[in-house]
Length: 311
Image (tube, rainbow, N blue to C red; front, top):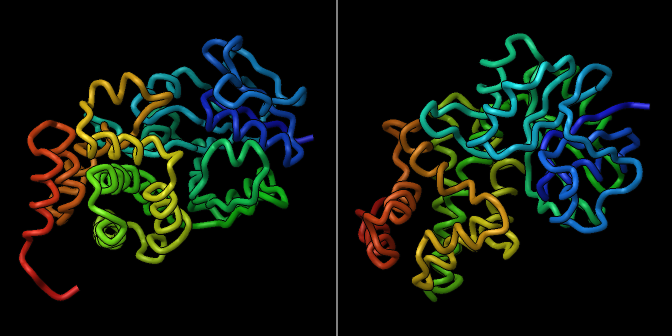
């Protein structure tokens, strides 16, 4: 039997542990506090998932790293991986401006790495509802092996040879989702959200290609698919954050009351710094909003008064 280690017992880690077991693997789930594992998704963990506070050693076919990006380096530095590492987190590290796979490569040179990303809400994956996602890796054989290891009839996996584009899509969509939520929270309507998401996709395209990703990736599951889900699904923490901001709530209270990490908050300024000269007006407006330099009304006005031009 295949063996999979899942590092991180939040909602997404719990869901992926359940999915890996559903796909036929014996699963070990690492949690800082094993007594609290699975609390975010009650009933998701079966007897086929072993929960432990000990980081995995030898004998695994894959290690799924499901740690929020801003904490990924600390946990990954404690690993001694002897199997491919699959990053299942979305964002850009503040300070270093590194993507998740870049952090893993820096800490563990030579260890095969891949990204699992796509339009997936944890509670639906845990429940076995139909979904699709992407395994992105440069190595063809690694992609094929990981897809066979983690897929099941209800969880369809596609391969992608552009891990850079896949990671950038997962990072940027969280920032754009905050903007989409703010539009709806401020009562500006569905038309405004549709326009914002469409222009957000254009920003994502510029961002990905400028940093070496492929344009095709932007229009796949890790780009457009994830963007649509996060900008329209009420289960998205980033969308809910934006919605609350749009209603006039304070960011400190929103973060305090959130059930999990709102990745887009730290990602917005890191994304802009990594993008350098790329034109990203929506992401810039979100960063200014989060930093208190713009109100929601001023941020929307800034976007609406940009010079007219061809699409």
